[in-house]
Image (cartoon, rainbow, N blue to C red; front, side):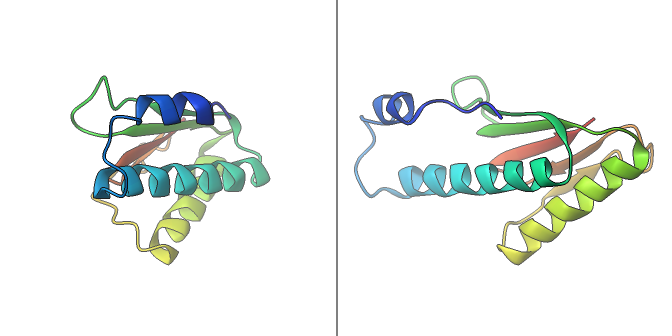
Amino acid sequence: MTLESPESYKRRNADEAEGTHAAVSARDTVCHLREMALIIDEKKGMDTRIYDVRELSNVTEFFLITSAYNRRHINALYEELEDYCKANDIVIMGREGLDDGNWALLDCVDFVIHIF
């Protein structure tokens, strides 16, 4: 799992007003992403990465990307992450790829999960 260091995160967000919704939301998002990366690790997902794309994209803030062994593994990871989102009141705006079976995507607005 790759994620920017806490020092880098603090430096980058130092200009944000303390206690603003955006700062709280980003921290909450990072916590959720870390928990989901742990779930993926427990379920034998491979090469899990978390990318901060706030400076590169106006569509989402983070990408969580992971790999699976086969279609069944993709579906299992997808279901685990979907259950986590539902249990934590994370809105899933879009779902893609499950019909094809080679990949899956969960669009949770603040972050997008890709499973290959």
